[in-house]
Structure formats: C-alpha cells, structure tokens
Image 1 (cartoon, one colour):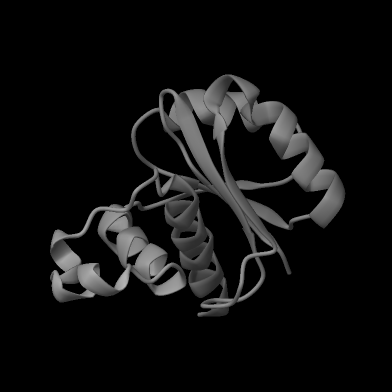
Image 2 (tube, rainbow, N blue to C red):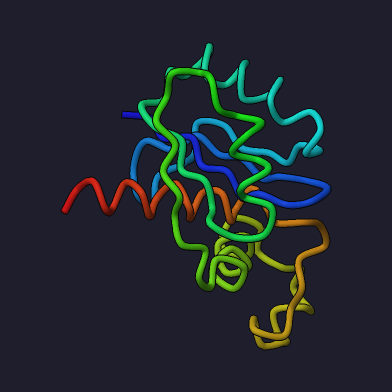
Length: 132
C-alpha cells in the first residue's frame, strides 16, 4: 500500500511515495507549489497511492485545495518535529564529509532543502496510524 506524503509550503512542497516505515521511498522530491498538482497527477498515475498524507501546517489548506479531486482520501497529519527528524534522515542517507563528522549532527545544516525528507516522515506517520 503506497502513501503519498506531502510537506506543504508557500513556495515549495516536498513529496514522497512510501510503502513501508523506514524503507526506501519509491519516489521523492521537491516541487514548486504552483506545479504541485501536475506532479501529484503523475505520481498518482505511476504509483496509485491509497491515501495522501498532507502535513497539517503552514499552507496546508491551500495545498489541499490544489490536490483535491483525484479520488484519493487526504489525511491531515501532524508535522511536529518533522524538520529536526528530516535533518537526521537526510544525514543518514547522505553522510557528511569526513571533516564535518567532527561537528555534532545537531549543529549541521543540510546543503539543500529537506522538504522531501519531511514528506517521507509525514507519509510514515500515516502508515503507523493505519498499522495500529
């Protein structure tokens, strides 16, 4: 069962298609908000997700309006601490260079936006709710 996770934002949105908690996402990326509906259309056609997990945060109402109408239920999911956890997930997938390993991980900032990793966490939270 694939879940499409979306981390909504004013200018950009992270997205991820996830099947298992802690597994490798089937697809992930960051899309400008004004092009998100088109990207969701292609993801729905490619992966046929059973639900969309939309982060309940900044700009979620607007983004929900953009992605409604695909016949897939949209679940609003709490975004609490997803930025911090996404940072950890990013560095697990992309370990820092050798000299940066001396810096505590909590002080490191990723070199790019991590909205896609936040979307993974949002999708995994919905999966966890469905498993319980």
